[in-house]
Length: 291
Image 1 (cartoon, one colour):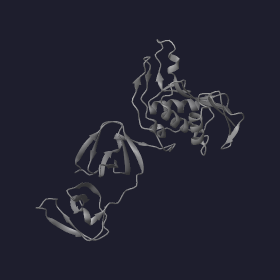
Image 2 (image 1 turned 90 degrees about the vertical axis):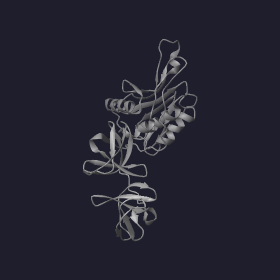
Image 3 (image 1 turned 90 degrees about the horizontal axis):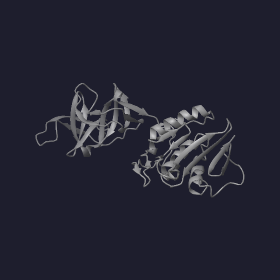
Image 4 (image 1 turned 45 degrees about the vertical axis):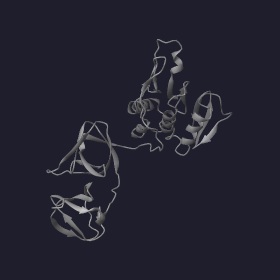
């Protein structure tokens, strides 16, 4: 926060609070709490309180997201006299505004908290694709097949490249499946459903995205989805697969393929069309791509 006038500092917020001194207009302080009409702020080796109308919030820029790798305590600051706030579970995503003295300073509630750097990992936003659908829970189909839970927003944590090397792409697909909560077959298929093979005709439960290479210059991408479930999640992940190859057209191509009948094979392109320097032909339920 930054004082908007000469502002007195107090020992607490009670009627018995004691005056400490005054700060000039424009003084910046780090707020750790907003309570009872006062900001609690770091000052010297301790804390002071300042009336909320005497200061304006200064929003610190988020540098990156972090994800806790274990149950993690949050602290009021990074000093030896820091106070415990609460614990957050493994897998909690927090917005980091600073990394200093072995702690991440993160946004928390209406202020900030500190998390030990070894308890969290930096989340790199590689693909930066907007509009991620919300995470969804798993459920069982009438056939006994199981639809996996999936968090498509985590796609952005995976580095997906424009490689035409089959083995390198298999590594990426496996990592992508693991990150968002899906299963991967042969590093080629992203499976949304675990099929109950004991039931006749259970193949109709198959919901899978795939990226298959015919050579180092020809590939196809598809989304088999007879049940038409997980469409939002599949389309979003498809955008992530396409973006490295089509940085300008990936969204248009994914939406056209899923929404306009090409995915099901009901629509097809008569000829190859050029997008971002590559040839594209949607036919037979596949999005074919060649250099």
